[in-house]
Amino acid sequence: MSALKLHPDRFFPADSGTRAIARALFARVENLPILSPHGHTDPKWFATDAPFEDATSLFLWPDHYVTRMLYSQGITLEQLGLQNPAADRRAAWKLFASNYHLFRGTPSRLWLDHVFATVFGFDRKLSADTADDYYDRINTALKLSGFRPRALFERFSIEKIATTEGALDTLADHDAIERDWPGHVVTTYRPDDVIDAGKDVFAANVETFGATTWAGYLKTHQDRRAFFRAHGATATDHGHPSAATANLSPADASALFDRLMRGKRNANDAELFRAQMLTEMAKMSCDDGMTMQIHPGSFRNHNPSLFAKYGPNIGADIPMTTDYVHALKPMLDVVGNRPDLTVILFTLDETNYARELAPMAGYYPCLKLGPAWWFHDSPEGMLRFRRQVTETAGFYNTVGFNDDTRAFLSIPARHDLARRIDAAYLAELVTTHRLEEDEAHELIVDLAYNLPKAAYKL
Image (cartoon, rainbow, N blue to C red; front, side):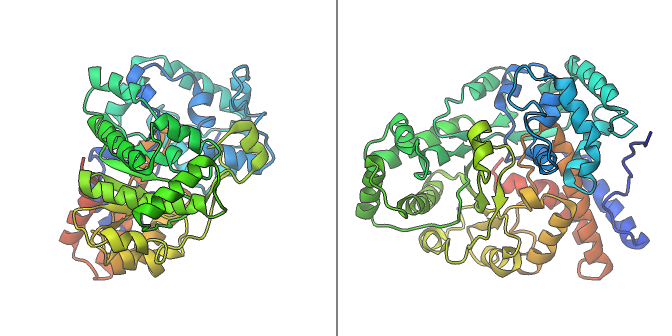
């Protein structure tokens, strides 16, 4: 059976001299606390501190990186037992293990192997032959107090983690966390559920939101933002199809809102409303100090039959081309020159890094670049990001790394990877005499810890 070993020089340069510098840089940050300022872990895990159920529900079912790869190879979601309480979880796990070779060369493989080796102590690779052993040992470990969510949080040296909740969420889980485990978990305000007028439930959601007029709608957002801030929120998040922004007059914005609430929208109204609301959210951030994150460019739920059966977040989201220069100009005309505002831009369109995003972040005081995200959250993706944006935007117009994950146990693996890639990149700059080594030692700490702490006001 094949051994599972994490090489100490993984992701470092092949050249011995550059590798030695990368090792020294990584040593500076290897054991720094983890800041996870943007992600989608379930706050209920931390509120109840209940044991995780089993290997399948922990590693397989919630991870769309894993399910999409298996689906691409003809393995149905029914075979994986997705959303089936009566599913044979061991059988689903063995199917996953038998196809683990499909993940060779992918970040999923890197993260999973890291978790298997460092959290559970496995020294043989997952395969059909080891599937039962993995399943039994993981399930046995999950019954122990040291493998409960809060204990793992401490074991992973996580200083702070942010979850993401919709505008209609009561934040009851955050109330419970604050009562008996304060200071560890904060929320993030993601108001897509009451902003995306392209969804059939928009009007009903806005009514639940408690708004019947444009002025009342904006006031309710302000109130909800204050409610989220009282639960620790320092940031908002906006997952729109595009980066479009608008700057309508109050009268035009009110008329647009009224049309949408009456169900009399035209084909462009939903996009225009989302665009206007990005500008409104930016103005509110100027008032209340919340960092704003924009995550555009995903064609959500691309597979309609699977969406109808399983709902969102099952891996059928595909990157699209995204315009930022024209799309963001209306918002930037209003707030772009505000140095007291932080707007973090993410992209799924790598062709934008050098052409649009780096020049914009390298100019506008309010703009910062989020890390390589989602499909580019990988060794090559991270290196491409640094190579394309650094010369124009520098390092200090970026915000370090955030893991943006639902897979709690993968958080240390993802941060380990990001820190190693940054060490490798900085070592390259040192050996090509573009950066002094003492500067690289300062930079690696900034990238791993100081920049995300500052950008998200943690």
